[in-house]
Image 1 (cartoon, rainbow, N blue to C red):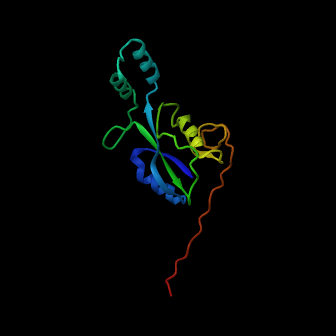
Image 2 (image 1 turned 60 degrees about the horizontal axis):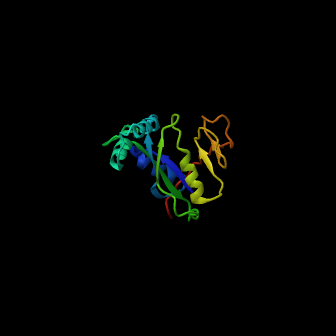
Image 3 (image 1 turned 90 degrees about the vertical axis):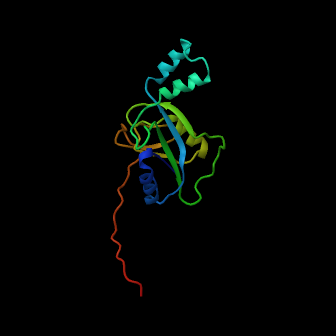
Length: 169
């Protein structure tokens, strides 16, 4: 089972990478992280305390105002997605109530919300897990990345083997 982050401007590249690793993409929308800017909590809390948010639609307006604005080909992106891909049948779903959308503020550069790891744990149970390109350790996960203080696994580079094609007899 593969859960891989990608940005909306790189959908095709994400599919091609998963397939190159021998996986079949099952959904491009396993999780969608709605990125809130780093001041969202402060501003929303202040708006609530000052009575500037008086109804549900005021709250939605405030929430939309606090989403992160990134680049984009048509509209300005403010989400990242996690595709889910499998080899063979994949893993059995352990919990049917896991929701796709995660609202979370930005952390450090390229840091992903912990909530997605937690939801993956609930979704698939206690299975071996590794996070590649991680920024830090997470309990129950092996991790590797050049921004980790120490990696918990060593990755061994693959090797290329020339394949000689012959004409069919």
